[in-house]
Length: 185
Image 1 (cartoon, rainbow, N blue to C red):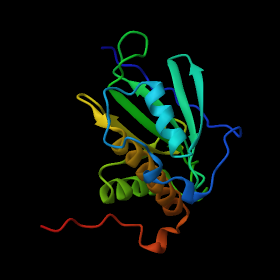
Image 2 (image 1 turned 90 degrees about the vertical axis):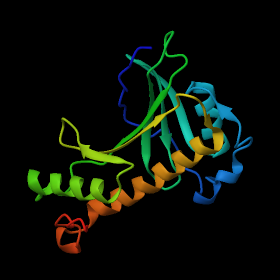
Image 3 (image 1 turned 135 degrees about the horizontal axis):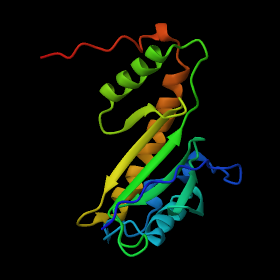
Image 4 (image 1 turned 135 degrees about the vertical axis):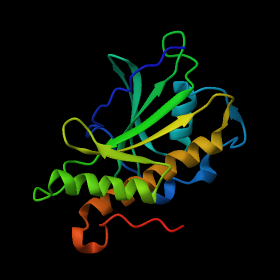
């Protein structure tokens, strides 16, 4: 297996949105059927059944999928840990950028926001990229198979946390977002 870099691309204006109620886990057929790897047909069929707008694109590191969730969150899905020219992929990354935040925020304030969100939500990752933009990332493993329903749930959970992160970044610093809460024993 060779690891591949996830190409981060802007999900362009070509992606539309659908009503929020269209993105429903019950729309996914064969929810308990196991997907043995993150190949494009499996990902695309689940996105289609959830009515999540998507577009497959080619990049220097292979094919990826731009998605636009009903709540307005736009993300890129890339695959990793693949064999045979991006086949039999065991990893999938969902990644979105959220801009640079408020102009008056210092670098320390930005990093505090990232740390607080990561502390509160340990199963999803936020950070600042090399260009100073906030990002939200989720990595999925598929070593021995994952159900179609679990993949669909993961996509919808990501969209939900994307919306939460966007709102969190709009909240004033005095809103209780800072300082980092003290862990209780």
